[in-house]
Length: 285
Image (tube, rainbow, N blue to C red; front, side, top):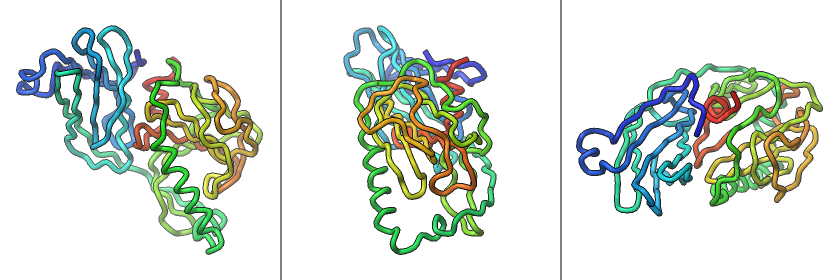
């Protein structure tokens, strides 16, 4: 059961009287640090006894749930960074039973940061175009190819001891040019600091990428991924199984950076979410 300290917990039998009338056998609750873009939501479902198949759809995506007991199931629903404020129905099916829950996403104001980096990482030379395209294709395939089983353990851990020093979702201006929002959290750590796996999983990427430098991506299963970037050294290889807290590399300053730090990004069924929201919901006390 996810830790829900300092987390909003909303329990409902269904979304509205009409939904409840249709599917009284499914109870739904959610845990979230906030219902805003970039946040993780833990969906908890109590389904009819011996339900053999549970299905969740949210934000137009399939989200694979996992069993947490005889009748209890969980699903990790990410509110992507680009989701607009509004009401989004989530559909839950358990065998023949079906219900919906309306997730209300409220606005979030993101900061802006201005950084100076090597111009080759802002306006890349033509010679880098093919490599950048190959990296983008690799990442796109990676996010779509998660293990069908849950690989992570109960609690996530910090990959480094330092506190995050840059906010997820910050609008980034490099060398005076607007670029993509910051899709992770940065942790300012000395070069060479060991970087630990936030949780168990399988290493699906362990290589040098143009923008993120020496990068390790761990598939935690069921659409959940950790991306750890800018390493000075990678200490695992693709295909390795890792355990929570296992050293996977060393902090460095490779790729588009202003100095040595760790970049940690999380994907949940394709949605970009703040790693700190993962720690708030699924981390160690």
